[in-house]
Length: 111
Image 1 (tube, rainbow, N blue to C red):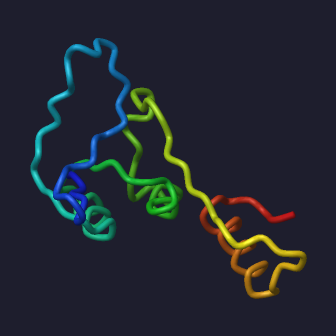
Image 2: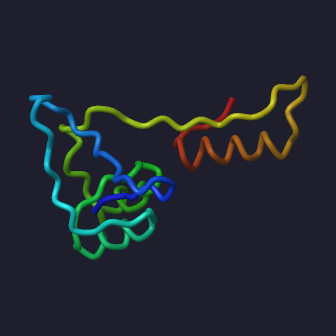
């Protein structure tokens, strides 16, 4: 199952390692959408495989309802950044949000 970028209509390329760069992988296109939740639902219902960010399927991977099958073939991992304006003091709401993101998305505690 593939992701289509709503802004330009292109399909997201799966980050698979290319052992022979001159030969591109031809991944079958069985379903295309631009919603992560839809792809998770279809994968949970045995309708195909999809490439999703770990935070979107962490619970499903942990409880065994989904299984990662292409880890050995992954070329890169994505990056996720939290950006905020600099200042002398961080607003308490921002600190709470950062701590929440660290615990829920990045699975670690803040400093």
